[in-house]
Image 1 (cartoon, rainbow, N blue to C red):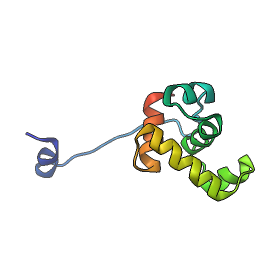
Image 2 (cartoon, rainbow, N blue to C red; image 1 turned 120 degrees about the horizontal axis):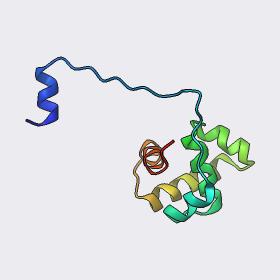
Image 3 (tube, one colour; image 1 turned 90 degrees about the horizontal axis):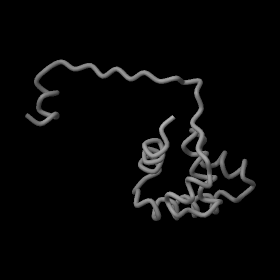
Length: 97
């Protein structure tokens, strides 16, 4: 039986446990190498994976917001992800904490 139908028929509970104090960290060089990103794209994507919003990332990196958007679009293209959420999910799967 497909999972979706099983969940519709029976009460379900999903329990996720994580350490909220443990920050996600990834080596920018490894990130760039694995996905073919530039150093700038890798820094931006790593900060996204840490939970920082794009405007704050632009300020932290000292770049214009539009530059950050362009780098994000390029990183999504190189990783074949369709959204920022998909990109972060790919990083978290590729670099488990």
